[in-house]
Image 1: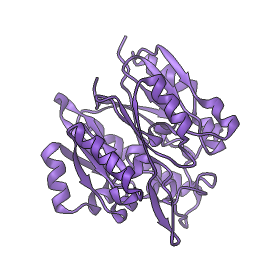
Image 2: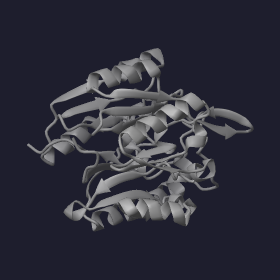
Image 3: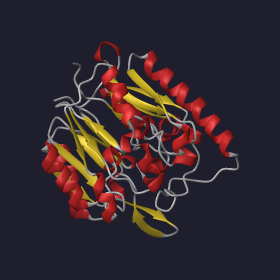
Image 4: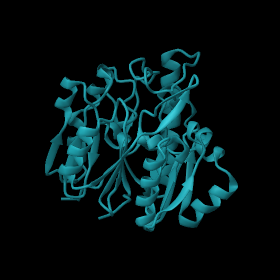
Length: 310
C-alpha cells in the first residue's frame, strides 16, 4: 500500500462563493465584501496558479470543470464526496449541506476512466443523508493507508457509527476522538478532521490542543508514534491559518512534497519548517479567497487518486 500518490483530481470552480449552508458549523468561513462573480474570478485565479505549481513539479493533476447548472459553491473541495482506493474501490459520501450533494457527478468517474483508471466498485454511503447522518470523505477521515488506520474527529459532519461502518468495509482500524475550537468563548467541534491534522508518510502535523480529552489525545499520540510518525504540533492559531490542512503528494522522480497554502506556510515557525523539510520539500500557493469564503484550503481541494491504470 502507498500513503502518497502522484495523481490528484481537482474541480475548477464556476460558481464559487461563501456557501450559506455550510457556514452554520464551519467556523473557518468568513464573509467578504465582494460580489459573487468577483469571488469566483479570484478563486479561479488562485485555483489555476495552484494547479500550475503542482504540475510544474510533476504532479499529475486531473482538472474537471464544475457544472454551472448545478450551483455548487463548494465543488472546489471534491475530497469531501469521494475517495479513490488502490483496490479499485471508490467511496461515495453523505454530505451535510444539501447543495453540496449535487457535487457528486458521474462525469467525474467517466473522466477518470477516460484517463485510463480502473474503477471496480462504488461503495455508496449516501443514503445515510435520509437519516441526517454524515461522513464527509477524507475531510472527515484521515487515512493511514500503509498502517490500515483511519483517524476521525467526530462532528455534525462525521458520524461515529458510519465511520465504524466505513472502517469495516475498507478494513481500517478506527481511531476516534473529538477536536474542538474556541468560537465566541465556547469549545465547539471542528467541522473536519483534515483542518486540524495531516498525515504524511513519516510524520503528522496536528493541533493536539484541539483534542480536549486527555485520554483521546494520548491515544492519538500513541497510534502515531507506534507507526513511527514524527509529530509536529501546531497551535490553534496556526490551525486557524490552515496549517493542519496539508497533503503530501509525489512529483517527478517520486519526489515528495508537502502541499499547503501560503497562509499555512507563513504561520509556521522556522523550527517547524525545518522539521518538515527533513522529511520532504514544501510547496505552497496563495489561496486567500478560497480559504476565506470556502473555509477550506489546499488539502480540501485535492482528491487523491490511488486507482490503478487499466
